[in-house]
Length: 337
Image 1 (cartoon, one colour):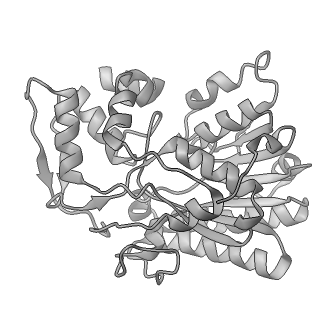
Image 2 (cartoon, rainbow, N blue to C red):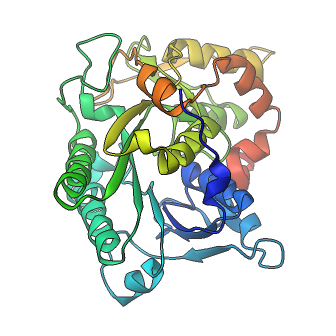
């Protein structure tokens, strides 16, 4: 275990790509509270300005600013943003569902965007680069529990493009000495998660149930997920940015919790539909959907000192007590429609 004082980030200029998104907005919030000089970079193709509106009040949050930029942009505007930056938290991504609609854009963002940001980081003397990746790089796991040494055999365009992004990160560390860390996310849940068809399953179920619609489970529903509380991922990012043990390393950022999609749907109905007016529906299986997750988080717990939230249902019940906050302002309007 390692002790990391995240207050060391105070005063440092940092970029959070995808900062107006679900995870990125929580990371921006934590960095602003620490006292870092935060640049939230987002092209708003998936992120929402509402997610960071509370940080844009300059009188109370003078250390936050928004930059509407695509991570693939390599022009003067990107150069200007990178001036004096100490740390990059690269959370922008083309979502898994989007890759089926436009695999070329998926590759451009997840691989080309990472390469572009790495080049900008070298050009401007960035000290640290933290890359958000995904458990999808492993493909259908064959070894349980799945550690960071599991072979890479992605079964989706998204997994392939995110793995390409990882490989670029490794190259810049090994060839140029850039201090990098890769965090592989697994099934993150929490407030502000996108609840449209491109969002996370918790928020999708929440939106449907609050609209009086049955939650739809794709396939048989026995797919196992390792749901991870968003605040734990924020802590993982902060520690990865500061710990010498994180240099050049990749970590599974996963809670270790095991919940099936059927259990999730039924459990959320019990919380949100006590009158039992709704029921679980089943749809066709999703292409590239992985059935089994049993993820080892031993490395990140031992090396970075992360203690993950283990009470999934307790945390979810508490979070869902304020449905409007969970869904976010834009989603709230949609749910009421």
